[in-house]
Amino acid sequence: MESIKKILEHLGYESVLELNINDSITLESGSDAIMDLTIERVSDNHLSIAHYWVQHGDLMADPEIVFDISGDEWTPIEHKVDPRFHRHNEDGLPESQQFATETWDTNLQRQGFVDIAKQTDHQDTSSYK
Image (cartoon, rainbow, N blue to C red; front, side):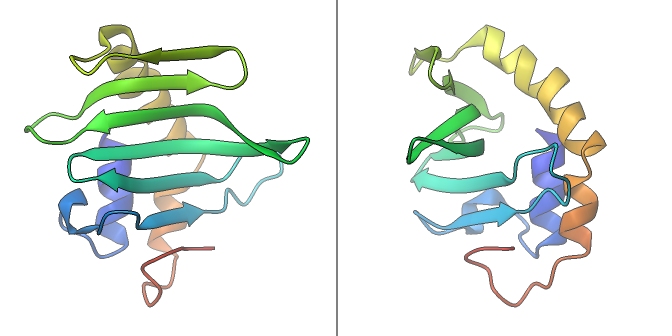
């Protein structure tokens, strides 16, 4: 996920491991057609990347992918698109790896999230809005 690594770099992080557990960063899309992007370190070795929206008061993901970040490569272990799709496998999800590294990574760059991170004030590291 090169776009996520670039976003973090522009926000002052050399590595995703510099995020504390439960730290999250939300970048507003700047466009009504695109959902905000949230990056959250959910455990020692898990990073969640998601677009969220609200339906009937419930937070919905479209998509959310949780990556195992304990090795050199980020391995997707959970992939969901609410309310209809959810996969989880601690050994990895090869089909989600392809989606994340090819399709979604490219889309995040095209949607301008890397540029938004470049323009963001780096003072508040818990949430960018």
